[in-house]
Length: 321
Image 1 (cartoon, rainbow, N blue to C red):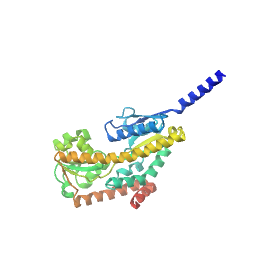
Image 2: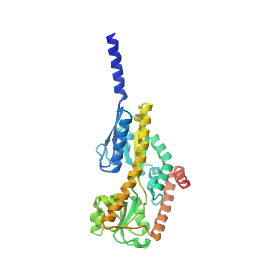
Image 3: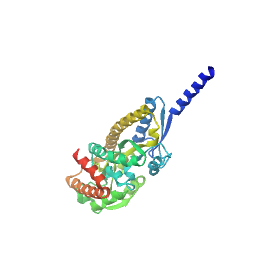
Image 4: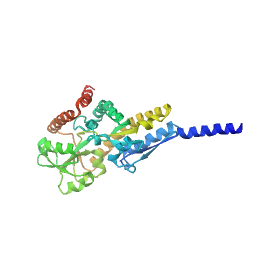
């Protein structure tokens, strides 16, 4: 009888062990960013909600995989979960670049509508690659900094505009500026030496990088709000019992709502830092807004040409909202 009881106990113990899961979640961003703090809260919420049946360990700062490698790592089963900037995958599939079409969604409300329009299409592409999208959170919008005031679109002509990807190079050219490729860590020195006169980046980058030491004009044009997505291997998700799956989805929904609020708070705090350090913060002139809208219209048409029916479905859904 004792041996039977012992045997049943061993089976129960084995079942308990097998029911516990551990996920490594790879991120390319440092631990002090709001995106990583949000991931860590998500992991804590999952652990609490499941009573420790699922433990998620966040590996920040590209400590597990470099940022460009994270999606592939999840896709191939090398990591159960990961976070990456989805527009960074646009070379693989232009549908991933929906949130970074310049001057289409230029506020948090508009960015949310664009995300809601793009989510079904992007989730379908990720699903076909064996991944489930859990949640998505934007960075603050890409806005305009300048050494000198920009009162009209003509003020860009003849200036040197920092570029960091094909889209920003094209924007500079369409504004009549000369694009100069400069990475963010070198931007302060480039401004100090006159190698760049203006550029697009987030309020947070300007505040964190102390770019207010060189530039004194900031125009919150919010050209686009690039989003991070957090995904999990469908295989890893399917291995969970229903109650644990529900707990993950609830924690993911909470993380998404919390992350959008965190992003807005970071934007507000960063703009205050710019103001406190002598930067003039002003809305763009009608001339600048018209020029940026024209660029947005052109680049939207180019994006639609590369994405076909799926891209059209996203833009049509966005414009109906």
